[in-house]
Length: 110
Image 1 (spheres, rainbow, N blue to C red):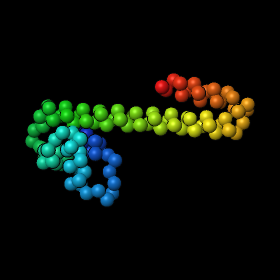
Image 2: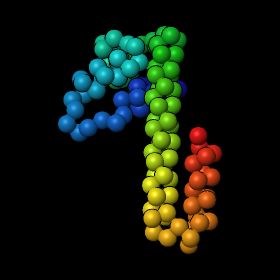
Image 3: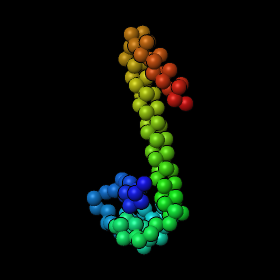
Image 4: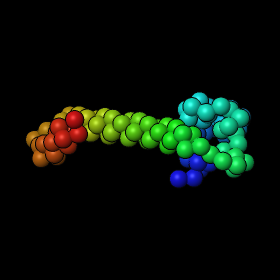
C-alpha cells in the first residue's frame, strides 16, 4: 500500500472549491495524524513512515470503504422499494412476477 495514495483516496470526495490545506487537515483527522505529518506523507516528503502510521491510514481507509458499502446497499434497497411501489401502482396483476422478484431481492438484502 502506498501511504500517499491511500491518504488521497481517504480524502475523496473533494470539491473543486476546497483548498488543499483543508483537504489535508480533514484527511489528517480521519487518519489520526497531525497536519504536518499528513502533509509530509501526502507529498512524498516523509523519509520514513512508521508501521503504526501505515496501520492508522489503512484502518481509516477500510472504515471509509465499509461506510460507503453500507450507504450503497441502503440506496439499492431504497431503489428496489421504489420500483416495487411503481410496479404495484401501475398494474399489480401484470407485474406480479416482477414484484415477487423485487420482494425476494429486498428480503435477501436484509
